[in-house]
Amino acid sequence: MLARIYRPSKTAMQSGRAKSQDWLLEFEPASARKSDPLMGWTQTTDTQGQVRLSFPTSEDAIAYAQKHGIAFQLSAEKTTKPILKAYADNFASGRKQPWTH
Image 1: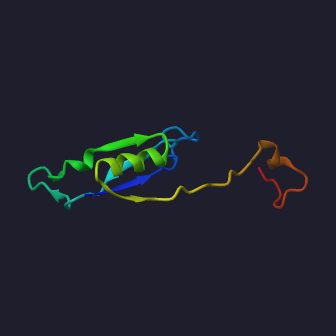
Image 2 (image 1 turned 180 degrees about the vertical axis):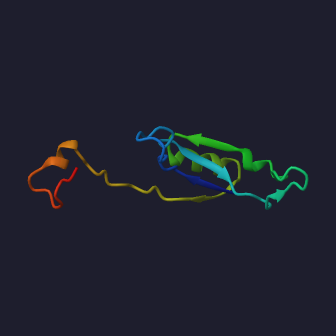
Image 3 (image 1 turned 60 degrees about the vertical axis):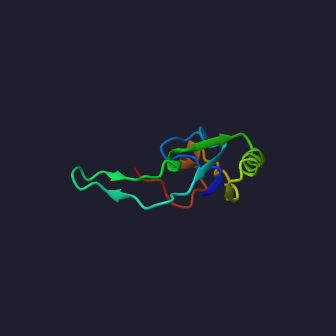
C-alpha cells in the first residue's frame, strides 16, 4: 500500500491556481482495472484508490503517513517561472515580427 504525496499542478482550463495550493496524499492502485463485459465500464476491487487526502503542507502529509504506518513517495514541487505578457506588446515598435491583420 504505497501512497504518493504531491502538489498538483494548475489545470489547463483555468488561469488561476485554485486547487493547487494543498498537498495531496493518494494511494497507488493495488490492482489493474478491468473492463466490464456487459457495459464496457472499468471496474476495480481496490477501494483505496478512492481515498484522496489534502494537507496544507508536505510536512503534515508526511507526519500523517508516518503516524499511520503508510509507505509513501514524496514528489518534489515543481516551480514555474511566470511569463509576463501585456496586450500592448502586440503593437510595440520593437516587435520582432511585424504586426499583420
